[in-house]
Length: 288
View 1 (cartoon, rainbow, N blue to C red):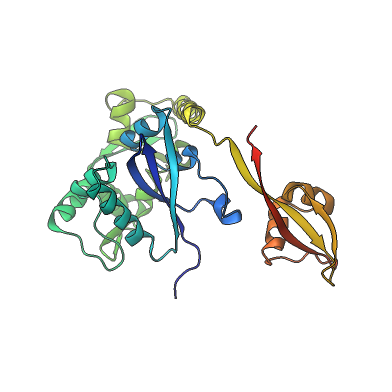
View 2 (view 1 turned 135 degrees about the horizontal axis):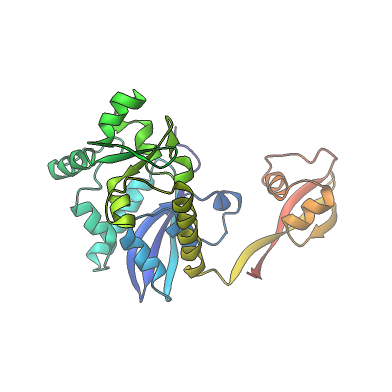
């Protein structure tokens, strides 16, 4: 049985050329299917510097919504868009990633030999361990070694290795603390410090990460308008009683959250007072 919630296949476009085809399932689009997909939404997911350079360094790029997809079909749909755009000579970063063996497996799809080689190579990149005070503890040969010797949770599921260490090293710094240690990929340290420091100021490092994140968001283009709906209120006999400009205004009137109002409009919640709330007219409001 297919899951109902999937996501949005989108493209990063500049000068009529697509530079990236991505997929997102942002919560705000689940709450409001007509919500605008912003550059912040797209760039937030990626630590790849090539993608960030396209997003942050350009003032004339657009995020184009291509299609909505189910959870079970998004990989195929995204791949189709990448292949099609590649044939049309768009300078897609995705194409190079596929050539580098970073794509090629999903559910029942098999990896080719080159992909398997590159993935096995990536599994043995060194990982650096620091204690809670930021002192260097050990440079491990791979995440797999840590998964087996420290976390004791290494397993292979459908051809993919799984362990907490793989998740931890992908998280923000404040969520990297596990087993009384902070864990870093060597590439991250080399990019930040130019080497493997014997001691890291964890607090300062975290603050610098936050500053960089805020700077990227400031540079990202914001949409000029956001989509909202008026909220119409009816009694049990379907007589129209009143209207509100948006979910927030209705939430203030009925003393519930805006999310609760949206759930009522979608038929997922009941106001429990004999009233029925429905979405009304679609409007565009300027982003302040």
